[in-house]
Length: 147
Image 1 (cartoon, rainbow, N blue to C red):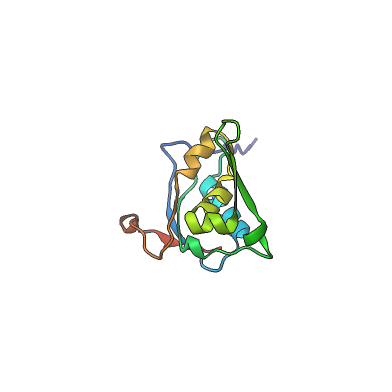
Image 2: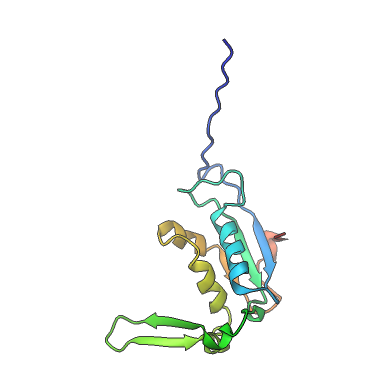
């Protein structure tokens, strides 16, 4: 009797193959871009995706200060932080946050789409966001990511 046995391959740190991708964020919508970046950071775009292991790739985002919101979100959307002390809650609109920290809007959006565990913390460390069109990662030979 000829029985085929298929073995499920689970990726580990010896067999993981990570790539570097560069994304130009100019004119892109924040949420749509963030979901695509989160998918790459998690490794869900690969056939060897394993939920309990960080098999994602590195992502470099350029022109993060030129992302856009749809509608009136730039003036209406609020970002809240809380220091843990009484009266320590602060609220900023997207305009205020973009003026002070232009990369923070995209970083917060991507981080919200990753798991809230140690695994998610490791994934967010593979994201590099820059305001200009230059980055210091030329030695890694990043390739443009096709959405």
